[in-house]
Image (cartoon, one colour):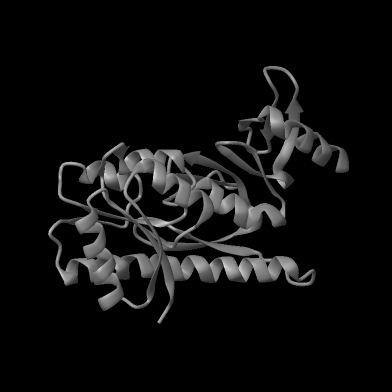
Length: 249
């Protein structure tokens, strides 16, 4: 069975201990690599660790679970909220939560949530492994990528992607036929995946395929015009890298 890592966050010691016990007893495939009782402590853990799953309570002594997610907007962990209140469910799913479990939860509730996380984590890891292996082989560059939407998986040619734009925890892909696809993963996820195949994150919210650069306008802080006629801002710290790429053409 696939081994996954997890961090637990709950400000109630008894609840934290109960979740840890349930996981160790019924889900040996989950390795608990840390536990925190506050936003501050959770942030310290997440700066040092990248868990596959984050079990997160909402109301914490020094803030909320949402505060943690706002500190780490590019967090790739699968989020499972475990909370006593049902009033935040809609907001939770806006953060692309896998599941929202109400206390007291049953073994079945916990199992279903973990299975949902596993269903998403395995394809993610397989896809990353395939791309990383391909990138390290000069004779075998990746040419396709699978995009997971809310109701299907779409396989696209990487060369057809013009640009990607961040929308909180979602990313919109724009293609050379003027179509677009919205996926529930962060821009950082794709920036890390595609940086070795001609893509550059030119701004916090924008990732571009450098093959589609048409012009660089130096005024107004600097922005790119791509072949699809879109204008993409370039951050100050990325300006030199963009100019270097343009001079290499």
